[in-house]
Length: 222
Figure: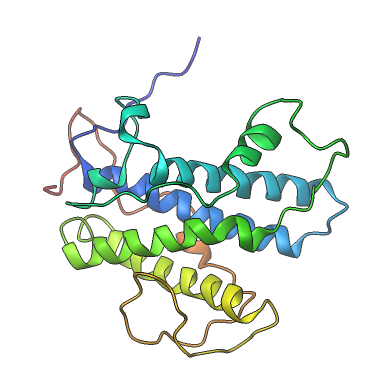
């Protein structure tokens, strides 16, 4: 018998945003952990597959056509009014499905890393994530719920670090110039090493949200 749990109400975007921010943070943490692990170890494979799964979840969140979304699928437009979805995919979506999420004959013959380029895999999602987070900040409606504001600020800084690394090379450390990232409108952030590790306290679901004892939204007005 499966465990009984309370699902996230669709009409509570401030609460549901926790899951989107969680996916972004876990993608970054899994990427950093993959880079630090020995490629020949079990840990490296586990971190790599975790990274790909979180990228895949965000790719579907950002690019899945509305007509293909299920009733309980989250979409950017649930959180940002007037969100314009990107047409087409730049990601390795097909490879993520066939090599990680499903057992298919589309997998490479040799098991293991398979030559995944973490930066190339993450880059399309980094761009869309920045656009989404900037829109959240500009709209301001949901960032006041729980600790959303702090987490959005941390993620923008961390994504900027990924952008610097992609634009200027993995060896770049301590660069403070603004990268050419679509949607980035803020001032130059503090120095971000290219091998950054996200704030450990922001790595999982929000701890600031009070538990919901009844159905409906949590205590703060959405």
